[in-house]
Image (cartoon, rainbow, N blue to C red; front, side, top):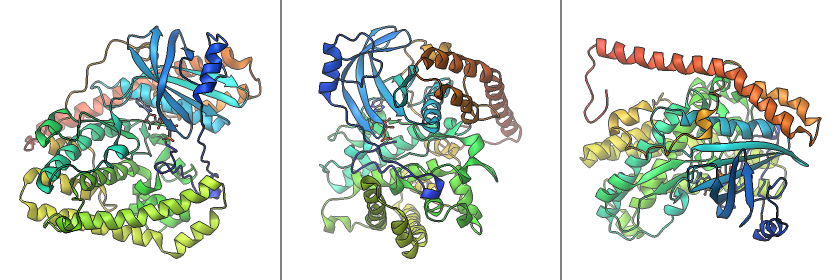
Length: 507
Ligand SMILES: Nc1ncnc2c1ncn2[C@@H]1O[C@H](COP(=O)(O)OP(=O)(O)OP(=O)(O)O)[C@@H](O)[C@H]1O
């Protein structure tokens, strides 16, 4: 999730699906200094700040500098003093004022923990430890995670282009291929557990891509990291006829929303009555669409020449034009909604205006133009690897296609190896905590009782969380086993049916 003025509209659904909020906490370094000067060895209700010592479980950290700011507070880079093998960590704190927010914040941690159990390391931060503490406003969920390298992709793509068109295009294609190779598998592994719902260029970090580097260097060295699982929802309870997709608030950055999210936002679930494909998109493919738009944005931002005449370079011109049209119109819709949220106004008139303007039909048309341009250029560009990329992006943006994330590795080859883990974390020793048949969210309802027993609750809360972990461990193990068996069965049935390895891909 993110909430920076220009890059993070925290847009939630229409008031009938829960009024949303835009909360940007500003934590001043002075606050941190004050905490330090009071000689606090343990921060309970203090915010992070330079030099502030933070204890989470048996580990101790000292805040160094802010890594970034989101709608729920700042994320700080911190030095490890004791208890963890990493030198530095990223400390995130989410202030939860309600049961719902607490459940959401804990789910974010659970998802990180679940992902790190994956056999092959993914490019997502690893959770080192976390703590839930009650405070006057409700609860604070503090997480220490590994620092993902690099900078936000949305800053990267706004840098001026130093190269001529041919070189820029090769660089862009190399970057887009690595973006899909890195983020695709993360989303694929995430799928059985959760939908991220906020895949966009602000929540993806890029590393190893200096401005002057050529495509060979970028292919070998650039990496992309998915962060911020703060809007993730349990994919098991989300999907189905009466799944939570019907009632849960809408999340994410509307510039990366598919048409189905706008339908939900402007009309509600009834808007899908005659639109089964869009309904399926909203239930299952929000992240794929977010990744597709991010890929197109990266391609055009890096490859598109700054000068308009140069831009008229066939066969790539149609893609640049389609993207520019999309960007102009969709960014305008986003700013209309965001403006109302940031001043806390009534969203209903803006929603009515957007319905009147036939936003969904226009968005479908803008996306159709993007796909047409991508497919047209793929047909004429003559470079098979560029072709594969363009067709893949077009399919990701196609509400009529049931895009499978496995396609990415099949067509682009496997993800380059992420750095090996640096030793077992506390999380690895914890019980498995994947949500099972009953969703984690439902189980967390039992925390409700603790809300009525204020501050004494720290220990009780920890105990309760421990209980919850133990309760779900059996089901989670079973589910992991089942998934592994399914994978095995599908691999052996493919082998039996004599399927060959596709060119450049894995079997
Ligand atoms: N593990 C990490 N490693 C490096 N930087 C990070 C990490 N986690 C977060 N950040 C930085 O902190 C910023 C805010 O983090 P995050 O998006 O998780 O917070 P949030 O409150 O959920 O924000 P949002 O408003 O985007 O929802 C990120 O944009 C990024 O710059």
